[in-house]
Image (cartoon, rainbow, N blue to C red; front, side, top):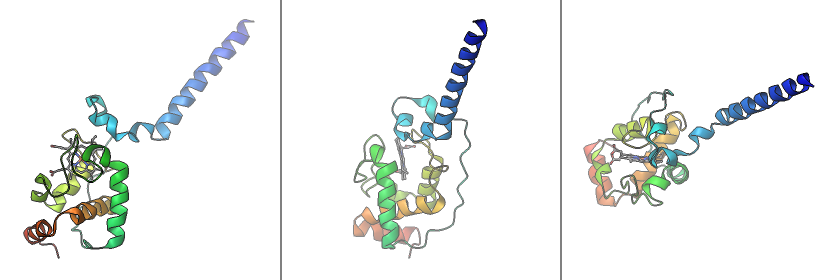
Length: 157
Ligand code: HEC
């Protein structure tokens, strides 16, 4: 009788551990970027190390495939805070009407990779090429005159 209970409780503990492990392994904690910004600052300062940004200048700013990929990734990862059309929400607007146009491509990539100021880091979730395609997409949303001034300032061809 005793033995049965012992075995049963072992089983329960094991199952709980397995369940917890499954949750961590599936990356569940990281699939919900909203939680970080929505009144849960603890999630932000996770001890997990973010892959450092391997910066090289973006070259293919007009690439239609990249723009399309960037749009998809933006809608999946960023729109909940920055708005469906990057018009802003709990995060600033990125559609060319705000501060974003004063920041170099490197600075924008750094913010995406490392996060900060209430924004989660994406360095472990999106690779370099994916992060770049989002910046290319955002740039494509800006009014032509804004794009032109930006390109001149940051030597984009
Ligand atoms: C949880 C909400 C949240 C999510 C998700 C989020 N951001 Fe942000 N983002 C913010 C906040 C808040 C700031 C302002 C940070 C600051 O002021 O320091 C910001 C700032 C930025 C900036 C700098 C803006 C500027 O004016 O220079 C960029 C670029 C940016 N985010 C891009 C992205 C991209 C791309 C994604 C998706 C991969 C993303 N963000 C996902 C909340 C978020």
